[in-house]
Length: 288
Figure 1 (cartoon, one colour):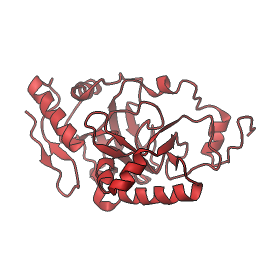
Figure 2 (figure 1 turned 180 degrees about the vertical axis):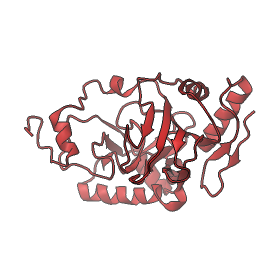
Figure 3 (figure 1 turned 90 degrees about the vertical axis):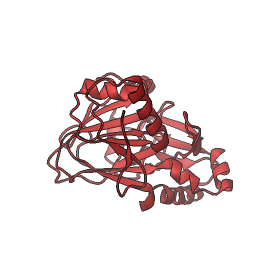
Figure 4 (figure 1 turned 30 degrees about the vertical axis):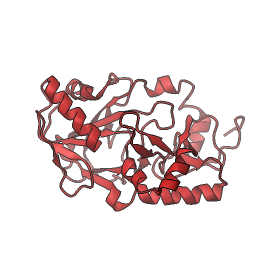
């Protein structure tokens, strides 16, 4: 049965050396579910897993999307490249965000590349009861970000980009814990406020979310498998320019993939490419 210990020096998360290359029995799967529900982030060290083995292990936590329906690998010379990524939760701009994410270090420069995690449940606990209640009744607009390296909110919200509205504080879909569900990459504004007031409150909330004591920085070692709750935790990374090797195998728990949730989105649309270049989006009929 997997045994878990706190990650040394981390504000949250636990780690284990349990070998996931073999099928899990009912007791093993229960232990993983229990630890995941409590800690939200699990690190398994010294793993050597194929894509199928990673998916099988992740299956203890729910329905794993097959390869081909979601990004299966992240690398500095491939998907997502080496640019910085602002804090975000995958597909939070849709009606069904990804539930669980996992990355497995197949080939990395030891200790030279990181992923950062911010605990949105812990941040919600630091809200005053009055503010938590207010935010649970205040809608936050999340937009698919074309510029992902920093917070870059367009002056006019493009109607061609997927978006979703939900309260700024939501209950966790499994545990019911309050989650501060806003992010620097994807949250555009808070409803019922003018732009200045919304930006000021978001700035305060980001201060809670991304305070050093609320962030775990995982330094990758080959063989690491990190599994995290995509509702409870946000993730991001610094610029990775100069990192020669960073190949991470990816699998996720979700009911639907991006194509199913956003069937009308077209990444080849010239308006999307223009937004990515930093040009202002003016109207649905704008020509670039």
